[in-house]
Amino acid sequence: MKLENIIPWGRSMKEYIGMFNLSKEEIKFQKILGCGDGPSSFNTEVDMEGGSVVSVDPLYAYSKQQIMQRIDDVVDEVMAEVKANMEKFVWKNIPDPESLLDLRIEAMMEFLMDYEEGKEEGRYIDASLPDLPFEDDRFDLALSSHLLFLYSDHLDERFHIEAVEEMLRVAAEVRIFPLLTLQNIRSPHLDPTMAYLREKGYDVTIEKCAYVFQKGGDEMLRIIKR
Ligand SMILES: C[S@@+](CC[C@H](N)C(=O)[O-])C[C@H]1O[C@@H](n2cnc3c(N)ncnc32)[C@H](O)[C@@H]1O
Image (cartoon, rainbow, N blue to C red):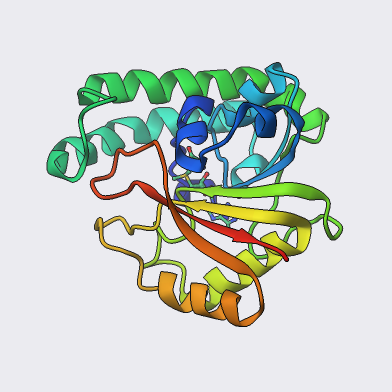
């Protein structure tokens, strides 16, 4: 994927904990895979707490300097988009756009500080769904934050099914957040993906989560291998 097609925008570990209802035990003891973690500080912060996260993203094909430059290039555009769509978000835990920007910059700076070391340690891997470079059952938990379902206009139903099946090949459980598209409506790919996975024998549930920023976006999908 070309860097000019990627909008780097990263969330913090606290936000991941809220989005995925992650417990302290899961953070500390589970082998976690983050699909499309981008410049989020989730991997960095979990690593500092002694936990284990491997993140895959096509962004990791690029150098620290290139990613930093790309963040610099897009930040005004992303913030202008947020300000033009204020009514789409819940301004509670994050009270205003300035606080949002501070939060995102802090998370992305933490990621950048850790990026080169993390790459050497194999924590940041250049790979893209629906193909993961791991053996079967390597992870306890695979997460997707703000990629699947959100970009339903760009990624079709077949992509979603292939991506989730691939995540289930390498992990015992998959959690996906949010279930809404960029237009704040439930993804049209959600029901067909859930029906397909149930048919295949997986346990599939929608659960409320502690985190909400996109209006109506307070649910995650949990899929468990029996
Ligand atoms: C909106 S960002 C979300 C970043 C992070 N998960 C978070 O919530 O803060 C979406 C990320 O998905 C990555 N991405 C796009 N297509 C992908 C694919 N096929 N497989 C894995 N990651 C992908 C992008 O490079 C980008 O970093």
